Image 1 (spheres, rainbow, N blue to C red):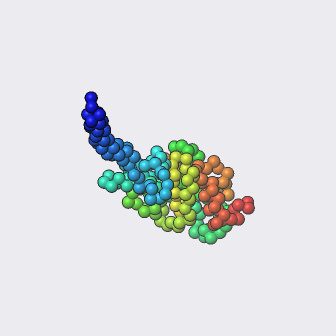
Image 2: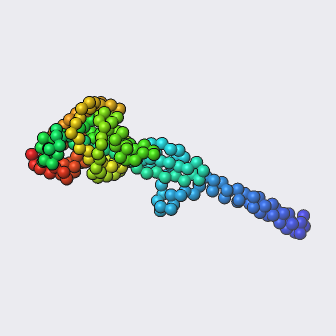
Length: 225
C-alpha cells in the first residue's frame, strides 16, 4: 500500500474516533448531571443530605420535621415544634401570691417511652397556634380545661429529646381547681406533686432542667427547703 493510502486510512480512523468521542462526551456529561443533582443546600454553605420529598413527623437524616414541595423539590427540615404546660395548683386564689410552699404541680406519668414523670405537653398540629396546642394537649392528657396561659421559656437543645430534635415552648398555667383530672392520651396517670418534691422524681426528657429553672424564677425559696 502506498504512503498516500496509508495516511488516508489513518485520517479516516482518526475522524471516526473523533466522531465517537463527540457523541460519548455529551452523554457522559448528561449522566453525571442526572446522577448528581445540585442541591439547594449549597445556599447555606453546608453539605446536608437531601430530605425525602414527603411530609412527615421526623426525617431519618435531620431528625426533625420535614416538608418538601412536590413541584420545585425544595426541601426544608426544621426541629419539631412542641409545647409543655407547667400547671401550678393553688387551693385558693389567696395563696397564689405566697411563696408556694404549699402549692403543687400537676405532672403526668408517661405511657410510652421514655418513661417517667413529665410536664403535660405534646406537638403542635399544622394550622394550630402554640396556645391552642397547649390547651388541647392539657385537656387530652389531664382532662383539665385551661383558661389562662403565660409563656415561660423556650427549650431547644438538639439532644433534649432522643427521638428527634424538638423545640418546646413552655407555658405557666395557674389553676385553683383540678376537679375531674385524670390521665388520658399517652399519659398513664396524673399526679399532684408538692412543688418542693418535684425535683426528686424521675423526670423524662429535659424536664428536670425546665422545672428547676421554673422554680428558680418564680419560687426560689422552695429550693432552699
